[in-house]
Length: 223
Ligand code: GRF
Image (cartoon, rainbow, N blue to C red):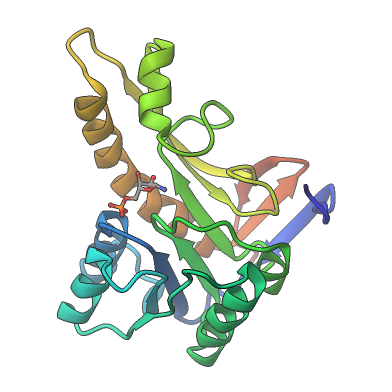
């Protein structure tokens, strides 16, 4: 499935001297998007602004919230369209809006390898499990049914494989005896909202070294 492998060791260099423009992609509820927007407004993500919010579904609650918040909100419908043709339209909207980092926040569509290559190490995703356990749909239900005692969430870079790229932040959530799928998913979601802001800050805070799959933040070099 994967066509392009990342180099074994590489530095992701962000120019930390200026504000970064984020593009948010979503398909539904939009709570992770709201958590990012609130973190920016509260100064918890000091180096970023949301340049555009894009949904592939007109009925996504998240896009209505983006409009209420006065953000640049676009719907680019994906239904019935070839993946890469739709991706080309999304990428050109991101580029037109000067987006430097893309945050997938409940975007229920696989990105084509071509899309991923337009933003190398510049696309983040959040997944409601401790990857590599339970990739794909309904991760919380999968974890609950498996009987794990600890689950959580993962923010990772997006590569050409599903829920696969280098891990930036993980948060653990214990599975309690009294839990059902819903209560577990709710507690994981609370941690998602914390984890996403943290991961954006990690990536924007300076330099990140990635060796194989291992990512660590390095000190910002003095000029
Ligand atoms: C979250 O659980 C996220 O981890 C997954 O999709 C869900 C989106 O929720 N990728 P929301 O739209 O951000 O509320």
